[in-house]
Image: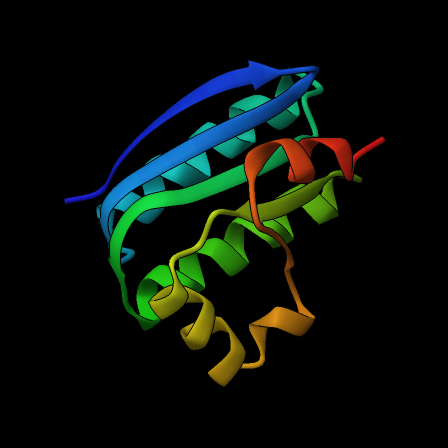
Amino acid sequence: MMKFKSKDVKGVTVIELSGNVMGGPDAAALNDQLHKLVEGNKKSVVIDLHEVKFINSSGLGMLIGGLTTMRNSGGELKLARASKKIENLLEMTKLTNVFDIHKNVNEAVTAFK
């Protein structure tokens, strides 16, 4: 089960995911959260993957959906603190060319400036 909480860091919304990211109902919850942010004109989002244990193809689809939501509204979504395992998965699926991926949250937040 995936959990997430969000916080504001220097005007950027940081969403910390934890657990297993496997799409399904979790994708809907995250998508709702992103749409609320867009409606509130908060269009800079960092997804913190530090607490994510496992991600499957539906989970990747969920992240891509989130990125699309943000870009379609003139915003951006960046990833931070992915484990080596998740980083390898992003490389294998060529998603390192799609996402702006950072080593830590501060670096990702600063990249919006």
